[in-house]
Amino acid sequence: EPEVTQTPSHQVTQMGQEVILRCVPISNHLYFYWYRQILGQKVEFLVSFYNNEISEKSEIFDDQFSVERPDGSNFTLKIRSTKLEDSAMYFCASLRDITYEQYFGPGTRLTVT
Amino acid sequence: SQQGEEDPQALSIQEGENATMNCSYKTSINNLQWYRQNSGRGLVHLILIRSNEREKHSGRLRVTLDTSKKSSSLLITASRAADTASYFCATDRLTGGGNKLTFGTGTQLKVEL
Image (cartoon, rainbow over the protein chains, first blue to last red):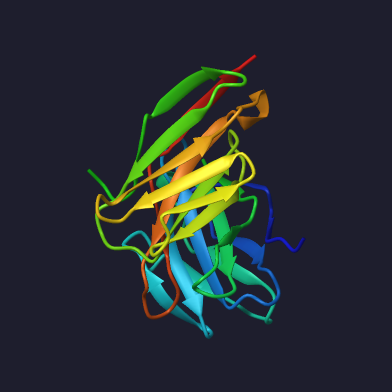
């Protein structure tokens, strides 16, 4: 069964550094998402991406965040200057059609020190 | 209360018993989905129920949806120790560029031998 993959599984970075989280969505899916989950809290929506542009973003997704689909297969989330409060599990998800379920990747645990 | 709240927050049962988790939401929805998350791991999709459906079954899972009460329930029958996990409901609404999911706070289920 096709699945969403994410790399790395765990990223440790120092405050102020840039990080890029990578995702490979399911190949025939059209909608792509990033969510995050701070330890012990619920999963929060960050951004959705469709037709090569951001379709919706949350208040969390400020100027420090950006997304890109550089080559038709990868979907990346960049955090330009990480803060301690960016420490969380980041999930990528993809969706074929709005009538179906979103498939989630296994997540990248980001630790900012 | 927030969009997508589950109750109970925690549930402990014996193997073989049934587990029922409830979810309430505030706004109109397109679909409601249930996900499972093992500790520190990714989100596994369990079942999707559309806004025009009232009940759905999948193996040992039974989901109901009452749009008039803006609530859903997830029933796991004949529970097993392997069902120990956190369970989240997630709602989506029809939007222009793909449907972001709004997650609930989750129910932590513990199934004891």
